[in-house]
Image (tube, rainbow, N blue to C red; front, side, top):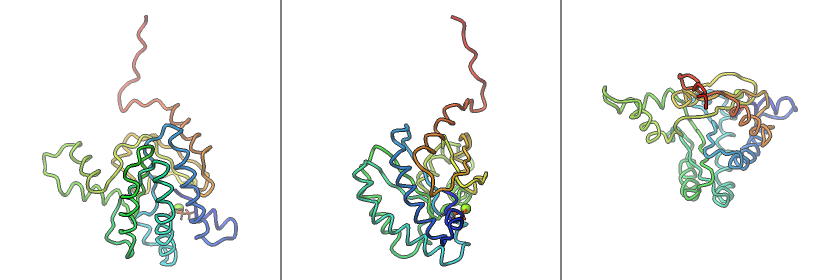
Length: 221
Ligand code: IPE
Ligand code: MG
């Protein structure tokens, strides 16, 4: 989810206003996902590298996260959305880990959509932490499992969307996105909605996914 700050600046608003509007985009996107055939929606909300931002912005983002968890849990439970948060929890401000646990518990029965939000997440750190617990004979599947268990990661990513015009992965799901189809859009995150998600899914459907193999040769009847 990129472009909140620029969205606000372009309108002469403080960056925090963009982050607040970004929450609306999360709501729209999560609600549109199941009808587009999406079972798991993973959002990058706060990167471990985002701690480098000015303290006022970081504090504002953490407040927003807390408010989101408090105000959205009921709606998520009602719409069958299971919320899980992954990333480090030991550096989050007091009260936030508890709020995450409450939201996860209250939405645990949801089966319509798995909504995963990355907070204080770094893919490199996650891979390092998962690999540290494995022996020299470990397989790809072992690391895959460790990344899911330790960090609650989503597993293989089919489609990776980045908004806001940047074309990079910025330490997001590097292992899991090995064969992800990449979709970049100039849309700023606060403007993102159902039509943009549908366009990304349509783009994805046109891709020829070979996973390193060859396209099967059509067999004559
Ligand atoms: C949202 O957009 C991403 C977060 C870290 C919350 P940005 O804050 O990166 O917005 P831009 O890139 O400055 O426009
Ligand atoms: Mg940005």
